[in-house]
Picture 1 (cartoon, rainbow, N blue to C red):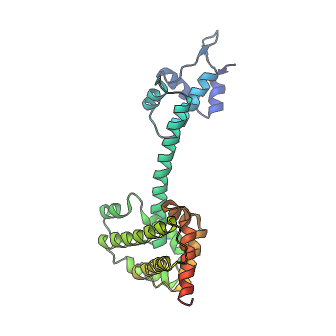
Picture 2 (picture 1 turned 90 degrees about the vertical axis):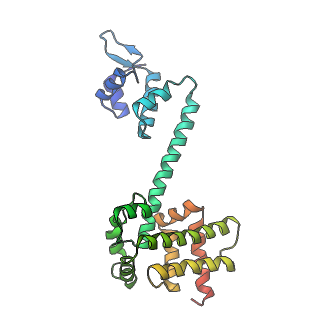
Picture 3 (picture 1 turned 45 degrees about the horizontal axis):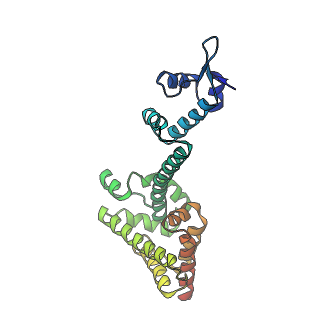
Length: 253
């Protein structure tokens, strides 16, 4: 069975002009021509088109796609392995962007007096100001929000790097304890939960144990916060929540 160019364009969700262009550059030439000279695409052509569209979605240029598809050493399994690797790499980049967003949301980083270059050095290519409105809607009427805003407006680049390193150190230690199978109510883990609470109090706002419990619940319940911790170690969001609750109970709250 073969298909006319219009039908192929409809099936693939591309334009006829795109298919003509692929033919002109030799990327996808139809295997048949009708008596009238019109293009006719067979099953093998459709499979190649599917591969082209996969690689285009992954951001490869047409030249790169042609080199991959015309590689005599590549078969269907090789294409799947390559696409899997490229997808994982793309997911990794997107997860890094999500992590930057979630750090900014958690820290409520608004009004940061940094130059554009300093912001890039601290936060990468993420602009924390774009989430200021959401943070203000959620917490704008709280004393904690106002205190956090007041503090961060004074922070320098060195301050931001220091608080970021401090937070990452605690998170890494918690992840190591989780991977080692240490119970969340172990004394050493409770000390890490306490360090997490004191980190918030030190850099952003006073964080009593009742508030810390609420934060722990949010880390585990909110998909964005949970994903940030899950990226460090699977199960870390719930582990931190349990440690925060146990630590609060240890201190009579």
